[in-house]
Image (cartoon, rainbow, N blue to C red; front, side, top):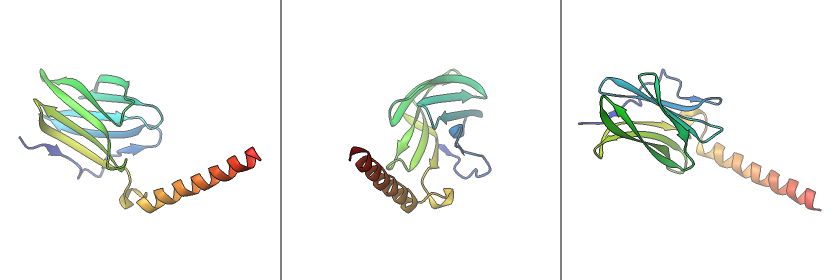
Length: 136
């Protein structure tokens, strides 16, 4: 079975500053929606708009088991490629059956690698200056 990768669905709002990253995907006609909060480690998974998992994920990648049509699916969600991608994968018996990827850092999202690097550098310099001033 080929995994469903629905990255071409551009009409959905995948990222919200308040709600985090939300990635829907379809498995056997059922919509599986995964949400990762921006401000807390909270992860939530819905199947056909019914909340089936809510918990905290303190790692860069977490695995959850859910049930769809009596079948157990292993849902893996997290960040990869130096935090530039958020991904969700669904596996049944170890075989990839659905996946979704959101490019967190890309020119299309208005946040390029240079913008991120410049912001981090400016924050480090500002932090150093403030710490130096406070310690003198």
